[in-house]
Amino acid sequence: MTCAKQDGAGFRVRSRRRDAGLRVPIFNQQGEAMTGQQTIGRMYGSAPATTFMGLPACSNLSRPEADAVLVGVPAATPYASVGSYCADAPDAIRAVMPSMRPPFITMTSILMARCFHHGCVSWTLETCPLAEDASENRAQIREAVGAILNAGAVPLVLGGDDSVPIPLFEAFAGRGSYTVLQIDAHIDWRDDVDGERLGLSSTMRRASEMGHIGRIIQVGQRGVGSARPADLADAKAAGVHFISAHQLHREGLEPVLRLIEPGSELLITFDCDALDPAIMPAVIGRVPGGLSYWQAVDLLHGAADWARVASFDLVEFMPARDLDGTGALVAGRILATVTGIVARQAGSAAESLPDPSDPSLGA
Ligand SMILES: [Mn+2]
Image (tube, rainbow, N blue to C red):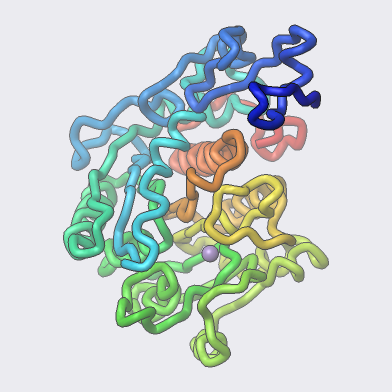
């Protein structure tokens, strides 16, 4: 970096890149180079998309004609103290995942890409980020998820803060028994925060109270959050299985995967703060020691080897805290990976696709 004097008002930083006349692509969230150069994505045939990876937009949620429906949900029950700080997440994550078409379908993305265009559609809920409309938000989410389930498809929910999974889980009532796999830096077992019992700190306690939720597995704890010692004691008394981030790093995925009962139905709830902030800075509270990208991907694939993914949600992505789109890209890839898993489990992946367990494919 070099410094240049500017009108006697002080020094401003000027990049060496500009001085040297180099043209390094800097991507905006539409995947277009801010320098005007072609991006690597465009070079291989991608294009900006209005839906996640260019998924077909859904015209009728009750008849989606797909195995999975990706639903953007800006808000459910925001706390008045912080508001809906993740309301822009669906748009931000969609924007960084452009459409993929040949020959941009690489070996690492072929599973996702094929599944997207044959087995998943996109829908957006316009939930209101204002707390006073939270009950309406929750009703919208329950109705949307219920419609998707009635149609025989799998809901993939792109939040929104961590209060979004509560009405998502509620929509499964009367449909069977489910295991919740929560991947999160926090346990989310507060009974209430400032009188709000359906906010982001209470998600797992509310889940434990639902008759259709059986086993609860919580992975990745390490963060300083709102939980109190009594909350942890209650969770353990309720039979929750905890695998902390540190334990995962020391012992690998085996302790988690052993907890997943073969043939069970999984509701996977993925808080972005479970990931290490080096790859996921876009969270409200960054804590070192989180999951790596491959730990997360292998956990999702490993869980899906034993159980059916009945729903997936990705929450707590906070665009205002992202750094150069890094977190959005990671979140998008995680979501894309799960979409591929769901489509494969539904049998919509073409038989000619490579074996997903082939390590050379990546995710
Ligand atoms: Mn969390």
